[in-house]
Length: 128
Image 1 (cartoon, rainbow, N blue to C red):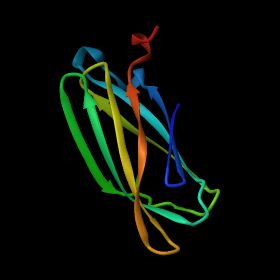
Image 2: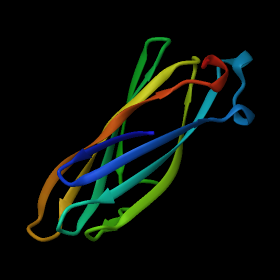
Image 3: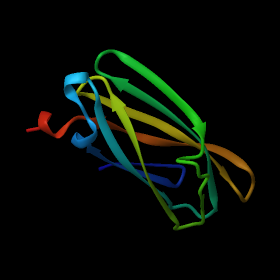
């Protein structure tokens, strides 16, 4: 599990290769990832937007921006935790993702960036 803390917000990522949804013969590799966001700070925060950089070893880098996460803009009081699961598909066996969340502190309306730690997308059959 990859973890990073930025501005009092802890983001952890756990990745699972999905062989049942993948088709290597057709260059389709599916991964799911679970994100855990924990507010370690003293103020309530809300996740507004997300940004992803997705690298596929065939040399493709794509960027994805959007509101919230999986249709939600979670509000996290101090000590609160929010989890969600999403997915990513690649054309090659190896890649990675990284990114950030744009969040707002409700106390003073301050918008800030929370880094999402880089995590690898590698099928289990490629690991020793």
